[in-house]
Length: 180
Image (cartoon, rainbow, N blue to C red; front, side, top):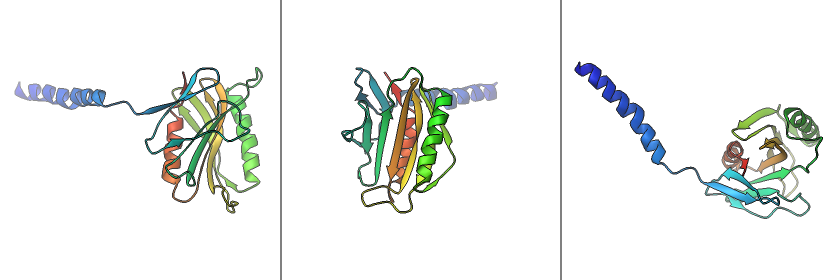
């Protein structure tokens, strides 16, 4: 009888207490970026990142941020213009990926597309390498199309030597992106 009681107590101690402790942990930090529509693009945020203004000429609603050293890692998430014939469905994402891959192959090496998915997003991306970047440009890139809450976006995470850890964290954070 005591061995059953020990087993049950062990189950509760090992099974439920860690869940209660996990429930007490603070939720991961999130960053909310205001969109022109009044909605917000929300992404899991790393305390080391810094957001900065989008460069001139990009569509309204573009989200940009960098690692602690912007010369080592930057991210840009760009909304595609609304078009009733071009949505964030899987077929359109594959077309965008194909076109993007072709363009990237002109300047460097590109890996095969990889799927990326999260609760409110899906997409594809490739990793590219520019063996001869111009001054001020980046050597490595993750880039691809995304469907965020069923809306079409494209993204790029660019980095230089020393920025890969931050770039990988940014790529992982993209799985959490959503529109509220």
